[in-house]
Length: 240
Image 1: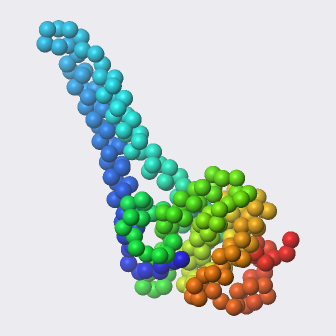
Image 2 (image 1 turned 180 degrees about the horizontal axis):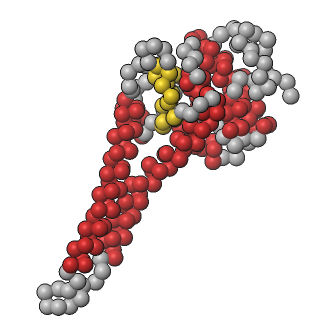
Image 3 (image 1 turned 30 degrees about the horizontal axis):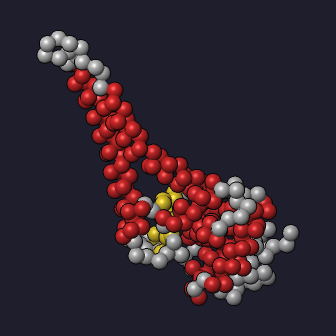
């Protein structure tokens, strides 16, 4: 679920390239509209003195294209900022959350759903990258009623929690997973779920997904009364 690579990954580079491309397209359309207006303002009459109509359609088309190029980036940033606030609450300090782009997903062959990079000293960078599918499912979860989330949405909420545990410095996957399952309800509540909805989501992940995780993500020390039990009220095995 989390790749702890020291070197920069392709998803981060793809995100930067895609954002830059859309930004250039939007800026180019704006500059094009300015150029059209400027050209019209210096040639308001034709060769025989008749007034030339203002280029409404050209300006409108360029404005629509500029907006279409700018909106996806703005929406992505708003979504990432919301996820970053949730992750920061779990970590205890400000962090960043990046969502993989569609282009990045097309060339990505990794099985992990998110990752945090660690430096050579074993310290995490204050940022995580979530793959396209969990980011999309988190958006659906935030916009949905949260009463009956899909299993993909349940997993996506957990992925955000799991990566936040890596951002806190945990490098062991099984331990990060156990810390995360005990905080999934908190993540869900920070995303807008009611206490009942949040606990239902945490328990569903614990009972339906955790037992099926690969061995490196599970440990017998995770559970009620086990060594990794933090006695949190948000744990899926907590009473009430």
